[in-house]
Image (cartoon, rainbow, N blue to C red; front, side):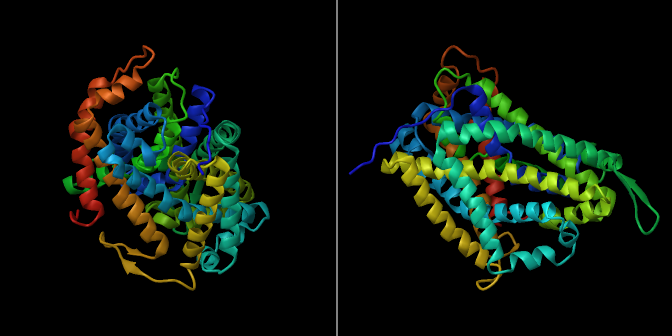
Length: 466
């Protein structure tokens, strides 16, 4: 017996933009963007990122939101509505959030743990070298914090589109923005003198972060930077995860899609830049250029050390920072879970409540495996791109390095050459609205984006080494 479900809707443009921006502004912006900016010559990476966001990112974001609104379907079923023979692409698109959700909840639990650590005045302990490793290799504590984060996420999704996703996004996103701006401004005011007597300031870190310097960059390095910036866009604007198709399906037909997409672009890019502004100058001030290349440990290892070194105000900054990261992580986790829940609702015709409970149980089981992958089930293998990995890294590699570029590439082929860009353009201009970047959109979907995505996919799977 099929259980009928009622498809919800965002109340209007603001609700949709806040929810979509909440999805886009997540751990990818707060951690991954600053790390890549620091690694890839600061201003050069940012310049490449902004150009790609306004072209490549714009095209993919427009496509997925328009597909969602046009079909009124989730990612699992939307592609099949456009072209029945391409319904397999919907399976791939839905597979991405299905893989991401369990390990995202584990990382979200880590963030909640650090927030509580700073709230309880244990920030100095978090600055110790062994603190992070000691925590994630514990058998039970990471599971408890993962469960807290997962239940918070499930609660919002269970409440639905209006009472859950939109309501909490309207509250959390403005708070997140205020916190990011406040910490970013403070980051520019600090200075530090190291043991050698060298004094560095936040403003010097700002220059390294923002000013492009092409003088020492080879063509090969520049290509790597472009590929890094393009890979970051998947995280930053939540494309190729099925999320924007799901959210697009909740957008009313009278909403100006292009105006909303422009707002999402601006909001997301601004927060990504501010996240770097918040982290890179502070890391440079206290750790120099060497500290800026710390990679994955930047948020959980390097920053607690900085908060400790700042002095009396450090613990307060630490609380505000991890509070902001919790907000960002929850809004993104909600969107990842919603993409799976919406797919079950549309394909199985289950109620939202039943779908949410089933997805939560699945996420719990998967997250338990990830947590135990740091202790009793620990292993280490080398990925095709040469990186060492255990369970979380393998899941991240499959979803982000393989499936997301593949889904984006196949979407470009479907829209650019099979059903034609006019299908998307007609949805965007519905209601008499204009599509000023129409020519750019067609060029990106038919030629430029497929070429870039093919190169990214070859690099990601280790076929093309740079």
